[in-house]
Amino acid sequence: MKKTLLSTLYLAAAMLAGTFIMGSCMADDINVDPDKIIESELNKDNLWGSYLTTMQRRVVPEDQNDYQLTEDLVGNMYAGYYAGTQSWEGGFNGTTYAFPNGWINRPFKVAFVDFLSSWNVLRQKTDSTSILFAVGEVVKVAAMHKTTDIYGPLPYTKFGLTNPVPYDSQQTIYESFFKELKHAIAVMTEYDKQSPNAKPLSQFDLIYGSDIPRWIRFANSLQLRLAMRVRNVYPQAKALAETAVNNEYGVIEKNEDNPTMTSNTALSFTYFNPFYNLYSEEGYNEDRMGATMEAYLVGFDDPRLPVFFAKASDGKYRGLRNGLKNGKSFQGNKLLSQPLITRATPYLWMTAAEVWFLRAEGALEDWNMKGTPKNLYEKGIRTSLEQHGIAATASAYIASTKTPARYAGISGSPSAEAPSNITVIWDEQAAKEQKLERIITQKWIAIYPLGQEAWSEFRRTGYPKIFPIVDNLSNGTISTTEQVRRLPFPESEYSGNRDEVEKAVSLLGGGKDNGGTRLWWDKK
Image (tube, rainbow, N blue to C red; front, side):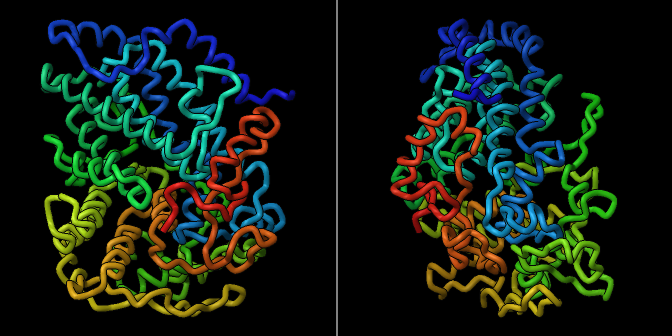
């Protein structure tokens, strides 16, 4: 059988695991000696902390081509944030629901070959009760939940431990995420109580500078995000969400706690946002505002519009329809709005605004989220506007009765009626479903440009209502109205791990291995 780079990594990791597995297995109970924790951890951190740095840098790839095929052409396009001004693969590409092998292979390669290779070393070289291990677990969940939300089943829980590696169902993967977060939060909490204000990872932590309480809040927020993702299929979701919000450290509530990848002079690290080279005229020149973004931001007269996008040559904000097989014909079109992301723009893994909106949705389900749906929803809007330095616009925007606009179109990009009649202002008398649409629509705006997360939430909830693509080249495997639900399993897995990936197809709930099959949590 042909060996791929991934299968070779499996074998190497498995050999390492045989040496270290007895000392590095995750413990369910945390028993830490307060007199020894700092001394022991400092030694381990100095040896292996660089692997944490590498993991953090690979949660969102810094390489522009890796970023393009894992975040931009998947999440950003399918979420309606951007549209492509390129005719990749002669028009038969992921944006038109035709999936070239290179497109479906890349997110898998980035996750398993690039990211998990560092985690394998970290978990084998450090004890599971160490603070380095715990923070690494949180980073791992932050990265890998995006991968399972692209494909569904993955070779996850046995990765690095056996070869060939069997696939897990997505339910099993999510249950592993929750177990890993619970373990990490317990270790970090124990450490913080024993060594308050200690900074054991300060030489390696690009996100929080080894501020452990902030890591705990992020871990809780990540648990809330994932619990909400599975709430339609997983009975334990409510308890997981309430535990996160009511944890003594709480969840992220302020923008200062947003997990952010940015330049760090203390660690001699300069961050270059990979998206700049994708849309800029000096780079690939391939992304412009999506028509769906135009409909909502222009229709709402959203104060974030000039923060997110530049005006077109005629002084208007204008987007492009998605999924155009002749997208390259729009390259350089001055009537389209460019994003305003620069090389130096930091990349946020999560925002405080998202967490407020998650709590608003939980409160809508009568979960204990420490607030009413209305108050939490409005707090989410205010926090987003504060994030972008336009807090003074909050009261007027929250009271707005404006609705999304009709898309007028431009030559070659068809017009479309307004996608929705939802307003910004909260309506207590509205039906529950309308309230959900209002919450998710505002969250979609607030988490921009996190297209991967926005696409997952669109699939889970159906909101916001996104214009369908123009040219569906899927040969009937994907509905234009339901839109793409996942990526097929990589061709590299069929050539290097065929028996296991073929078994994984049975974990798709009866669906075929194509882009029209819904994931485990996508059951609304």
